[in-house]
Image (cartoon, rainbow, N blue to C red; front, side, top):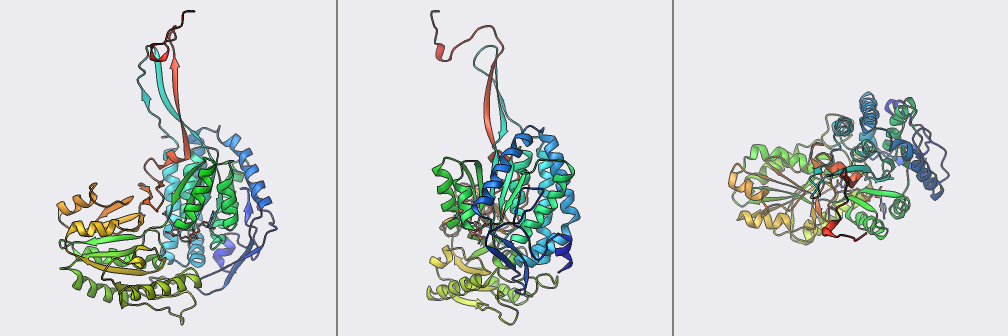
Length: 505
Ligand code: NAD
């Protein structure tokens, strides 16, 4: 086995079910994780059964009774130790992320750094779970609000950020006093098992209750069970819009809370006042980073007619210089797609784009000589924003369109079902302010002179419309993991009733 697998405690046979301290042998159907890099078998695990799910939920409920009463700064101290444990394992876990998911090693290490950063953020937050105080309209009364934990938080995550998205949820949920159950993507189970092993050491050293952190490697059936289970107070789901609609309906049917982080179809507007030296690297990184498999990947380019020719020429040259191959080799910029199905979606979308009047200016083909899952970064000129452009294809395909007026560009940018990330390249203040105003971008993220991908953990992350409306990570996103309680205290000797009501007794 590879060194980094041994360091992380991944063996040829792993259990995909744990309640924090111990993994136990599952009885479900075997699940083999293959690397998209070279189709090698990484290791095996099992899909959790309904009985496994039941055990994990019950253990989580018991752990919650202890954890919720621990003072928040002490919970923060545990998360601080988890951050240190991830620091100690950054190299090995970064390599596993790269090997199991296919993103470049730099991006794999970057993903682990995001875990470390959110741990630091959560430690500070554990002393800042502030509520407001209000002036009561009644004499000798005091009003304030406080925030309490929700209980068991379920985290459903996608393959493309196999560990960072879990940590954005779990670290915040923990300092807020919740316990977590994680259902990772069945396409990347080993990265999740490795994370659980890393934090298991911290839980053990601190004699924390089993069940603070549960993991169940399962398919959509376990995800559905999670969504339908009233014992899971909040379901935070990251993945496709198709999945999000199903999960949201199941959680809503029991009036539970949900937090949705779904698909994006992100555009960059390049105006006549843009500095192309800034725009070009942002566009190339946004389009080909993680082989186009980021929710914030740049998929649409809306370019002023005066700039479209020179920009297209530069992009074709830049795409030709992208080095594709083994993502663990730091000379390469772009690794494979996640699986053969993703390659076939890539091919179908390019064929559809051509049918809808598109012209492929660069790429458009798989690269079988590198392996089953490698494709060329692709640039397609579109005459209009047709159906294929409005759809999120999780692959490195960039559609380029031209515009005449900024209002036309903004209308195109907003005319898709998704609303995650957006950006404008311009040195003109009126243009950038218009883009950021209520008349501008309708997305959760709107940037000026930086691209659509690469969000920092300090800001609230998420998007509108079919992206689901949820916010994670920084700012006050923590409030989604807590319930607000309004308290009124009468320290006087009378009881003034509301609306001036008086009784005769
Ligand atoms: P996916 O929807 O296929 O799977 C995501 C997770 O949902 C997996 O764990 C899967 O097992 C589970 N799942 C699937 N159907 C389910 C159901 N009916 N009920 C409960 N759980 C179910 O997504 P994917 O292919 O792994 O990831 C790619 C998608 O994720 C893209 O659309 C991307 O934009 C999106 N994404 C969004 C964000 C964000 O923050 N907005 C971040 C990362 C990825």
